[in-house]
Every structure is written in structure tokens, then in C-alpha cells.
Length: 246
Image 1 (cartoon, rainbow, N blue to C red):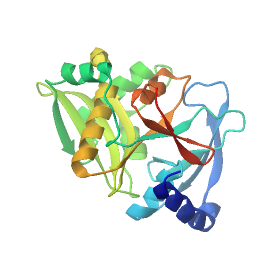
Image 2: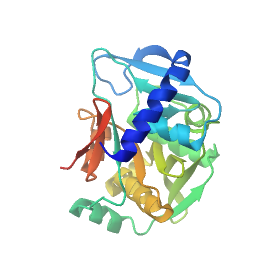
Image 3: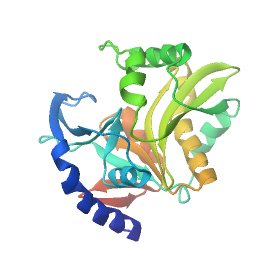
């Protein structure tokens, strides 16, 4: 464990007893279609300081709207927090191809906006990815992306003016948190998820941000396991970040 992670773990051990009583478990159907109920251990928060948010992320927590949560699933441990250190990352051949393939995209940085354009693309993505559910793009913005906890932004990708993808990220002094990414399924051949992460890496390097949190790595789920192709990467296992490289 690095000195940074040791310090974060120590500070979080002091913080956790002060906030633990705000958390509660909520059981729902697994959002990743694994054959177990998912138990979210979550709490609503008002605005947090940059550093407190950093401590939660460094301890494996995620954000959903104004909630911070971690998983307490008794029958499953598939959801593993994953992060990368942008200065360490080595591009593989496929990632270089993805960069070349997407050179024609325009990249915009903007505040969160529940615009008609964003909502329409988000709903197209959700209807393709989760056709069995009645997902609502506006609800994703109002209840998931937008928040009062921390600062964030959208990264929009356009092809000749047409919106083809949007990344939702939280940003702090030392960290960036990838909250969600949606894209036009018609452009799936461009590997937009990979291109989005490569863009986040480049942005972190420009802003001198050392830690990029990518959410959960789930080996059994294709939409989540591609994150391990970014090397080296770190998995939060047994209460510590462990370096991995494939």
C-alpha cells in the first residue's frame, strides 16, 4: 500500500465512525443482472469538501446523485472498485487504434445539462443497453448525474456537430471520478467507452490529477470488464488498492 493510500485509510478510519449512522442497506435486483440481490450501503449527503470526497473514493465508495454508497452483497463480491494512475498508463495496440479511429471527434467540456439533446441520446443508449426496463434519460440526470455533493462536468463527443457520446465525471484536486458514460449505439464500432477513458486520462494529465476512478470492474459483465485493459490498474480488494497488469 502506498503512503498516500495509508494516509487516506487512516483518515477514513477516523471519519467513518462519525458518518456510519447515516448509512442504511437497501436490497434491490442486481443492476448488472447477476443472480443475486444487490445490497447498497448508502447515505444521502449535503455538500462535501474536496478532501472528504477523496477519502470516500479512496475507500471504494461511489456516487449516485447525492448518495454515496458501497456494496454489501452477502452472496456476491463481483463489484470491485477500479482506478488508474494516468502517469503510469501504457497504451496497448488496440487503444492506439481507438485513438486514431476517433481523431475526427470534437471534444467539449461543459457543466451538467439535462438538455433535450443529452436526454434523447441517453434514452437511446438506455433502451439499447437495458431494453427490459423503462429507463428515463431525464431521471438519470435529475437523480443520478446532477448532485449537490461535489463538483463535476460533462465531456461531450461530437461527429460533425452530432452528439455521439457524453461522459459524466466528478473532479477534485487530486482525483477524477467517472460516474457514467452513454453513447449512440450506432457508433459502437468506434469503441466509445475506451475512447472516453483515454480522454479522461489525457484530461487528468493536463490537470495534474494523479487518480482516476473508473467505477466498478465486474469480470462477468462485458460492459464493465473492459476497464481492466487499461494498464496498470488498481483494484480495491481486502480494504486496499492492489496493482494489476494484464
